[in-house]
Length: 206
Image 1: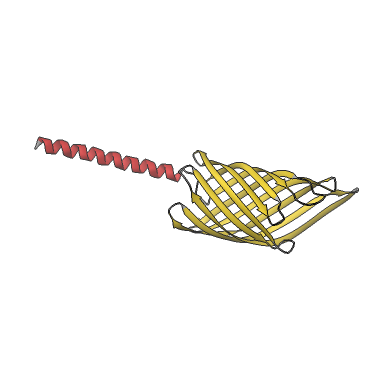
Image 2 (image 1 turned 180 degrees about the vertical axis):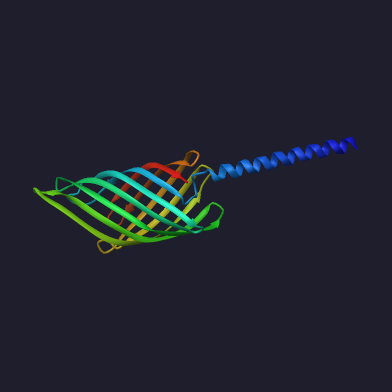
């Protein structure tokens, strides 16, 4: 009888510890910055331009995402870069706004599709004359997100923009958790004009 009582007490302690561990795991997972759709990204970006008379540029890349309901998120972003065009400094601004639908096909693996609009603006001076031009375009794309480990996420995206006939961009992004709701971000992209962008920054999840 005494042995049964001791075993029962021990079992209760074990079950309590298991419940505590599961609760802690749930808290840790909820604080993880990966595989979320409520976040803000800020990063430095360097661009290689494979175009005559356009030098390489660099600047700031930001992105904001908010998911009001499951499987749907609203996204927006601002990208600024500066590069020399015909030997004169030009500012390039890009605003992005749209929506993304996502679906978990298995634990740690999401597929997604996105659609939206982009506003481009370029301004600078050539031969003493100020130049400024803005255009609006639509974009659509598909992608995937994969949780490689508990601390690492890798993404792949293909995006189409109806710019200059057609512009396809292929991108890969990696995230590494460094703190609660904070991850480092690194990305590389290339388009069909062989322009390359390298990005490094941070993601703040909400």
